[in-house]
Length: 297
Ligand SMILES: Nc1nc2c(ncn2[C@@H]2O[C@H](COP(=O)(O)OP(=O)(O)O)[C@@H](O)[C@H]2O)c(=O)[nH]1
Ligand SMILES: [Mg+2]
Picture: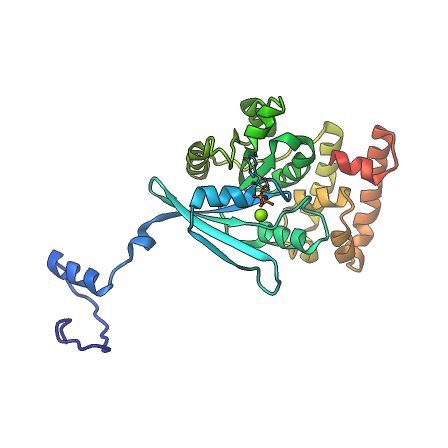
């Protein structure tokens, strides 16, 4: 059967054909070919930030009207996705629900955390409100633990300038070990540079960020991590976290992790070890409040 012989509604499987240029054009006109879309390089971006930092305005400013709004699976929380093209790339951006902390318990926070841990994306753009940096950086420091490429977008820089807040984005970038850029979703300042930075970070940066703690905390993280490395416990491995991440969550006394580990045999061994680590930190920081320790971890 030849392609020319096909009637409306009929189809044929053609294999082993030598496709010359003319026939290839016909294939294109039939929609038989890799579509342009498939050839395009795609970067999937997760927009993460606390509520009201300007994520929605940013996604709109970057993607104009290419917006698709649905819900996260099984819940009524809005899932906004949009795409835009920049240079050779298609950028697919997903706006995650506003979240104050990765360890919060609201539905929004759990959904954002679940997407950050398990979702299909290449890099995080953490959007912060420059006029409220201190509060916003709590989430940033938690995100730094995740072994993902990340950019910090210092949004509302127009407002910050008005309020006399001065931020040295280069210096902050050196401090945090990730690229930081002042932007404004409202005035569109630096939005093109943000897209450049996304491409650059995606294609060039190879070392995911890793938050470094004070020496004292790093020592305790390492002790727990080495213990976990040596144990190779099946239950621990089923968590799909690195042993460093688990060590940190243990020191943070993460409620979910504690619940999970509580009836597992390995808990009998971890528990005294963790208690010893926490005691060391309590002595060093002169506090028995896990909240105070948490603020440092
Ligand atoms: N001045 C200023 N306002 C902004 C900027 N980005 C967002 N906003 C405003 O901040 C408010 C919250 O923005 P929104 O996009 O809804 O935040 P979201 O909760 O993170 O999605 C809205 O009133 C926006 O118009 C910005 O760069 N500059
Ligand atoms: Mg929003």
